[in-house]
Image (tube, rainbow, N blue to C red; front, top):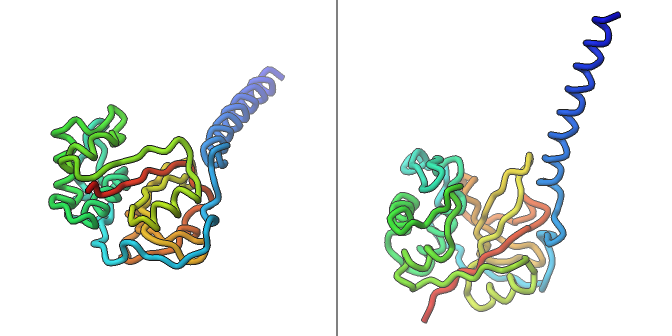
Length: 209
């Protein structure tokens, strides 16, 4: 009888841990109150930056490089870095490849302790040639206005298990945005709806005159 109650107690503990972990995962993968569907806004056919070099996180040239702050590898957490690099290349800046850009950001203190890029540092490493606007919440209207004005948008969504991921929005086909995804090895633009359901954050990058 005593063994039965021990087993029962262990079962309840394991069940509680499992439910707690599931709630954490759900809270990260479920769309937040500020999230918007990936499709929407104005219907248009536009490509702002189609012929960009494709900076893939897993490229052997830099995948093992360590970012600032957390010291994690570009291959693991370098999606934002690759997106910024592709935007820099579009704007005609040198030193836009992930290795060079990562070095410049580290020298400028451009990472938080968690390894997140400091957006003000993006302007610094571009010699103030690129401006970055951090929006409080994403909106289709903002993305559409940016694309029509020749600006690029870096957008964040969650992969399975609540893993954050950033992609570069470079155009639109109908109501579906076209992106460069650093997690993919294939170059070229793909529909955002292929990899996400909701956007949770956006950053606008523009070339200052």
